Image (cartoon, rainbow, N blue to C red; front, top):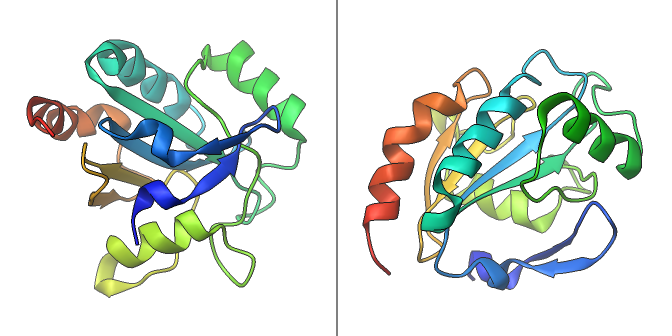
Length: 162
């Protein structure tokens, strides 16, 4: 199974295949507008702007599974992210990242990059998964890890050719 076999609906409701991102370095993040880590949207946007022309994409997946921190609908989420943080990277429809209704993409990510003590469950909003140009899940980062701290890893992966 490959990361590129998955698809998800964009925040505007359009189906989007992850195969469209083949050959790019991806940072896949479960987000929440009302989370204390929401200021990371600004850093995620900064990384995206800095490296998108080199083949880097940030993919944001809103999730309301942690303390009801993403209660809004798609329109409200998109408006919040754009108005407050200038987000232009791709956002997707709200999903579950844990449990029986978890989106298959996040099941895959969690299996290929488990957390501390080999746990698969995502612990909180803004868990980040870095994926190389070949679609391999390289690393999982805790919510508390600032996106700015990922820049060396992003640069290293961008330097590697397919």
